[in-house]
Image (tube, rainbow, N blue to C red; front, side, top):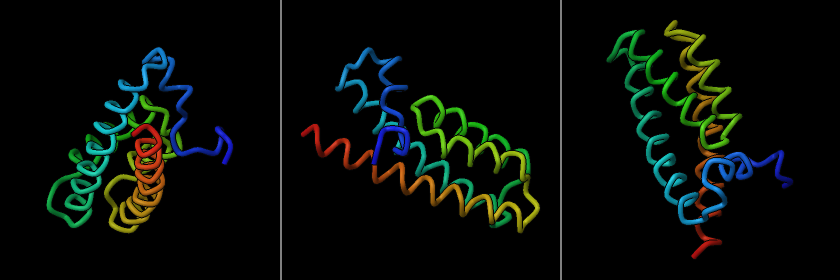
Length: 117
């Protein structure tokens, strides 16, 4: 897998961390946790537990965090989910794409961290 195809663009992250590996690791761990929490929240919202405003806030937050660490496909999926709104079918489809892209990011982060140990 070349760098352009990776779920996280480490060169993008390195521009903010000055290639400080320990900082990269910490940021990626924090993002992985935030991502899991965001998806759990979106699951609740899609189940009808919360309102449309909560959906927009959760997807917008995930979009910004993903793009900040260089997880651009996940950020794009979150942007699409933000625009999709909470109409049941579109929200569920958007959530499935988010879960797919998130899984790729989570695996990438796990592998990245294993290579650093």
